[in-house]
Image (cartoon, rainbow, N blue to C red; front, side):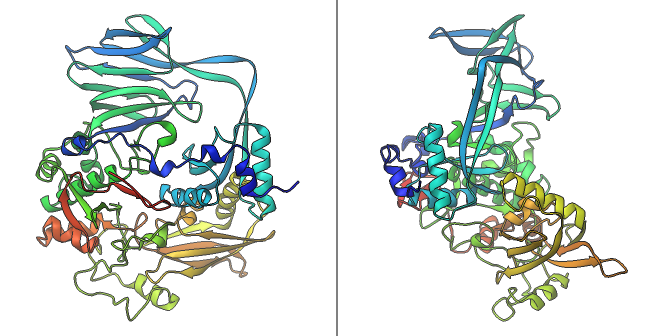
Length: 540
């Protein structure tokens, strides 16, 4: 039976059309004039391991206050320490959990663009991150096995083969449990605060003990586990971000640049974890955040000196992205991700000396690109470790990485035996790999943009070319990835900014170099935090 996507949507779906892009961010006009409070998932998947534990502790002389619901009534406990673990509860009968996975991505940016494309077709969706970023058909709309299968059948009838139903049979479910003052309680949601506003969190086997300002909340997420959420003012949050993203010994102007970008990035990205009822994570999928642990006087001064300042383009917060190293040329937004182009994120040769002229020697040309990669002098990053690199991979390892990816995608090519050839088949004018074609004994696989790094471990960026490795009998044994840069390469180069800081460049000059056409201004009620590209609606 063939059902069009539009017809399926009309089967009770249209009335629940999901505009996740216009999520309420909880910001009022008055809040933009003071220190906005953020919600950061500092332990995102508590309960993924059956023996997971969390210990929350107040500072010496202080007490924790824990609040939770018991039979519909608010209960309050106090104590110096709360120890959380998991109690596995057997279900009376096995429960089948399903979701329709429409696409999988390495980055939120590409997942969000995919989500907008599905919405444009009338498919209500939500963005999730069980491990990789995924776009799911909205669960409370496609709430029955029949609707999920009809949707999948409709998609397949229209030639969309990447979508699949992820099915898990659950016989036990973890329940969060905690001990305070020798008594055990089992609750799904717990709010934790302290008199001094500082709590130490210990998560053994994962992170060292860290101090967090503000309050904490343990709450369920969309993956059958729990998330520990830190509610913290944005300026305090920056104290746990800036020293870990840029270091503490760069020039003051460089530290100020990082503070401005980290503040801008956080406020623009409050929608990332709508599905889990918080806003940002604490790792490199957002910004590295360690609470008050590692806060440093030099970065604290930079945060204070730039308090409330954000970077804007046409009065909208910019995508304030940055990476460790660009490899000598920054990547336009669409070289790495999908979605509307950002005019201020363009290809810029990361040099103050005119080391390469992109207008005359495009890096889309393979000969030019290899010449560019062989050039090691005259760039802002030239003395940095990741400016140029070469990594070798055995064919067996590459084949296994590709196989793991295809299995996760439930691809019909997942049963291939070996890779026969890998070739960069499309490259951008800024040199980034836009398409990598892999020929296997069962057929060809094409990887686009940042999906290349989702599949293969070796390339540190998409600014690379391939060198085949042969044995003495000219049998293919593997490939060398030869390239430059570390990370996505869009926006600011952190190592490049070090050099500019040493040259005496001011923070606003560094920002203008990497984000041309932008303006620096204090947070105010007129600034758009983020604009919904699908519906042209602004969130302030």
